[in-house]
Length: 476
Image 1 (cartoon, rainbow, N blue to C red):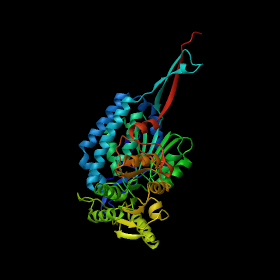
Image 2 (image 1 turned 120 degrees about the vertical axis):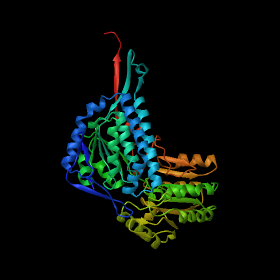
Image 3 (image 1 turned 90 degrees about the horizontal axis):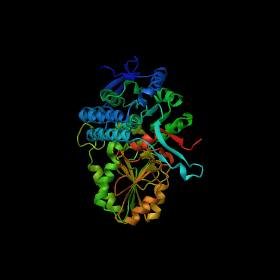
Image 4 (image 1 turned 60 degrees about the horizontal axis):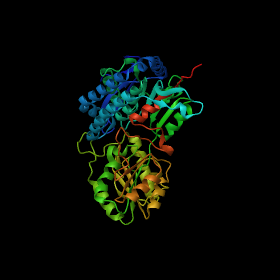
């Protein structure tokens, strides 16, 4: 099997050291890719630094056209890309196709932002000392963007960093997850076909301790954008120095089923929101709070639906829950489930494991002190709990170190706005799962869920610096 190469300084590079990529479902080889060391990474960073002028000189039209062409190329190669994602990430094929489609749209959104990136006039004469002065501010590219991306969306979460960087006129050093680098290689190929300046993108693959640390500690990188675990994100923040850092660090997202909710509508939303991509989504439902008056009705319908959901081969069109990313992660969560049961929780369905395959699992009788509720499982695991009052459930949702998104099901507008105003998260989804996301919306969280916002418009703002201009029109 021919190894995929890194892309550094405008050239494909074979380092002679390789990383083998295998399917988490059956262990079959998915491919292999050259692996970077610290020296290779430093070379990639220097090449990106030297390309700042090239990327900055692109006009808004050129940047927008590159991004639009890239979106169209992804649409053209959608089936091939979906196959790569499923092979290396174990994601159900229907969700891999969905990711490819979203990514194409995401790049088109980034193209729109490239064309409208600007500033605004400043009313200097609103100040007593500003009379006779005219001015404005304009956004300029921040410089080299280092993007460190996760395995669970190996295309679209890369696009959320790469697209805005191109729109802003920034060169990029991209480090995809070591378990899913093949999708990133394909994306770089399409970027070059779309007309991206070859100097503007550098692809490095390797461990976080080697490649990631070299990026974090480099003085030539102006901004780091990271999606991953809180532990790694906090470590990045502590080592990054003065460079800008945006972090998306996950959650233990809650859905609330209030007493006046439409249960038949809410159940399929919660099944998808809790178990799609084997629960390996930052905004996957991990906690469901159900009003005591509707608890039995929701529980029975929800558990039956989970039992009926597709579990198995990710290449099967009907699969909702495939493998977790590796055996170790599945074993970790299996241990959490056993611990919760020992602490008094009841296993309603699932809990079994074979290799990386963890059965879709529902627990009841859990509390906020249990690991399965308080920590991020990132797995096909949902805990269901009763509550009595609106005020109580909002307090319990907020009793978390995380705050990314929450879902709230109700048919009363007053209840909806109470939830909107009082749940402490980055996004509240009314009558939908917290797992809902469209790619142009501002996306990010509070507390340990991270800093900054993604979505092309908002990420472009993060990747630019404001320069203020004042012209004194007064006579000397």
